[in-house]
Image (cartoon, rainbow, N blue to C red; front, side, top):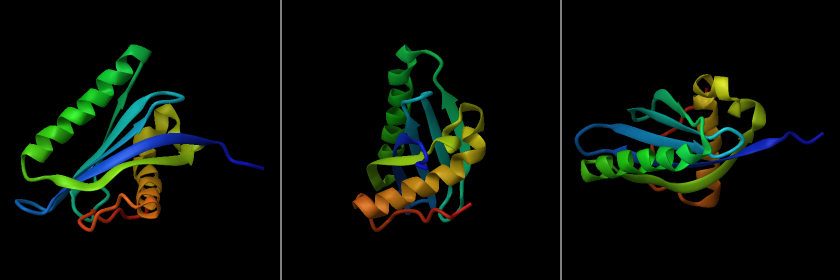
Length: 130
């Protein structure tokens, strides 16, 4: 029996200059749009925040917020360490009320996809398995 999956998109920034830290962005557009941001010291799981989207018109606003945060970080000492990567997660991980609790498990699917597809750069922060 096939397991249903949910499509996600992710990218990551790494700071190896002034501090050893990362910002990871994971976006889900369906079935319930959300942005998961993970940030923290390199090699750690990071702190997760979740921005849920209640109205379809707000999806672009959430994506714009993630892009603005990226731009601000890149204007500082952060640089791209995993480029834009499509990835899939089992649908049971992408349940609206459980996204924060599942953020670290979701990040491992992003990690594996970035490594397999090639957008993982040499400066990518290790993503520990939960």
